[in-house]
Image 1 (spheres, rainbow, N blue to C red):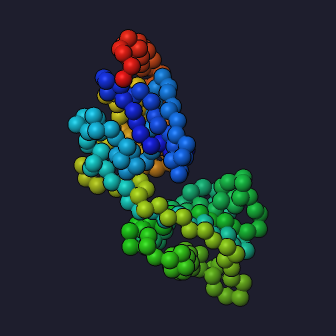
Image 2 (image 1 turned 120 degrees about the vertical axis):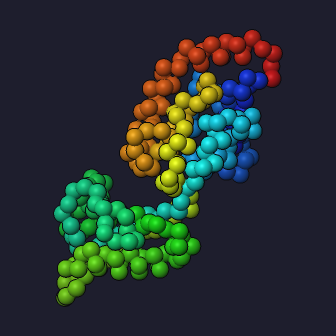
Image 3 (image 1 turned 30 degrees about the vertical axis):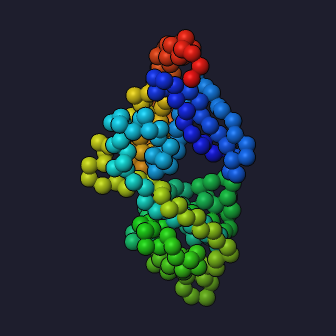
Length: 239
């Protein structure tokens, strides 16, 4: 269920999360010892309580802005590659790709490729039709795999899926590194995780995973501080 509101105690620590169904007919309060946001930075900025807006760790997030990204899934009737890892592309439209029929057990197929590709930069393409995007992608693949798209035994596209994310990873521009927040925030019982938080990688799956590990470690090390804050709030009258 989507998060609707971050509710605060008088000392600005988190009291609870308001969780609601998509139609908001069903709402409930979720309470915990510690609270973690794993939302992308653009969505989290919309949820920041007004009492936190002046804190440097949160106000700096205004400088981190997501960019559109398009992910493309292509199923072919032939094998295009035998490489078992992620590949960077020399194409100006396709940044990285992998043959999931080799790299992923769930898509394993010894005879047919299933490519997953990142179509980026996608700013000029995010509003285009899926058909336009697929046509442009196939044209780029013909340059990357000329032997499979010429002659009498060409690879044929069996099916496809285009996934558009209007605001995805943050845009890496000069100065943005100093804007990335630590997983431990100024709020005793509130923590952040996500590839935009401070860790050694840029916006990526690897960065997201590492940030989660760092966040868990910092939650664990903050137990005493969290418990002390809980005791203090328990002594106060109901808010």
